[in-house]
Amino acid sequence: MTTLWAATLGTSLVAFLLKYSGHSVPERWLSHPKIQRINAFIPIALLSALVAVQSFSQKTQLMIDQRLVGLCVAIAALLLKAPFPVVVLSAAVSSAAVYNWL
Image (cartoon, rainbow, N blue to C red; front, side, top):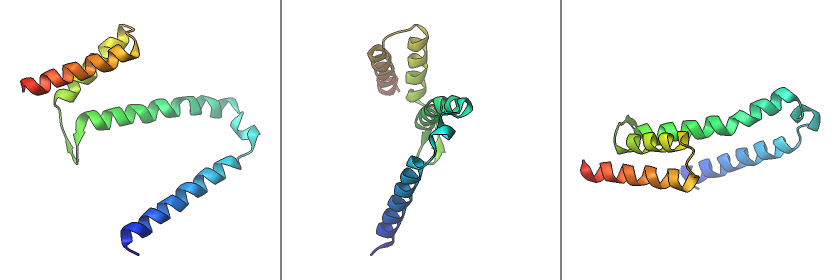
């Protein structure tokens, strides 16, 4: 067994144990208002971090390129309360246009 397979099996086991232990948490802990408030913000924080990492990095370097234009256009479309498909398409088109222009 190679090191890669051992690492894959090990992380799979850890992920399974974490998910299994999550099912054994008592309901009264999860129904606490503070926990519910924190849980509401976790997806927002994770998605924001993902957008930041994907927008400003390439492998191990920080980059400012056409993705920043797409992100700014998406933010502007969201502030104008555009529908989600319009936000995505406008960001993609503007990013592609700047990419082809540069």
